Length: 76
Ligand SMILES: [Zn+2]
Image 1 (cartoon, rainbow, N blue to C red):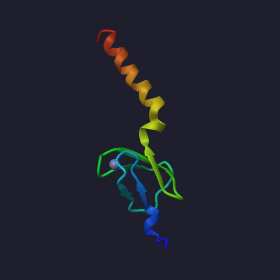
Image 2 (spheres, rainbow, N blue to C red):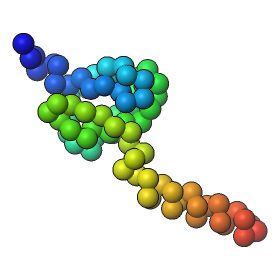
Image 3 (cartoon, protein in one colour):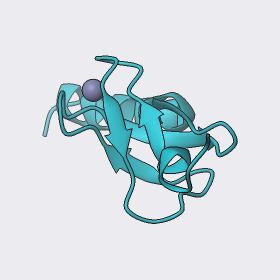
Image 4 (cartoon, protein in one colour):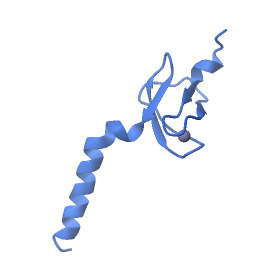
């Protein structure tokens, strides 16, 4: 039998632990796994699925990192 509570538990893709969400999750919600400190994101509600949040940030994140690295290299 499915309970309301069970909908709010996802599996951490990093360590496989159950990650319980206090409120009804929404797609795109960022959460942190208590077990391994991975930053995760809700990618699906029914069933509740979690994925690494970095995956969706990848482009922006890399651009920022490269930008910083370039500034350092160029001599300041
Ligand atoms: Zn984890």
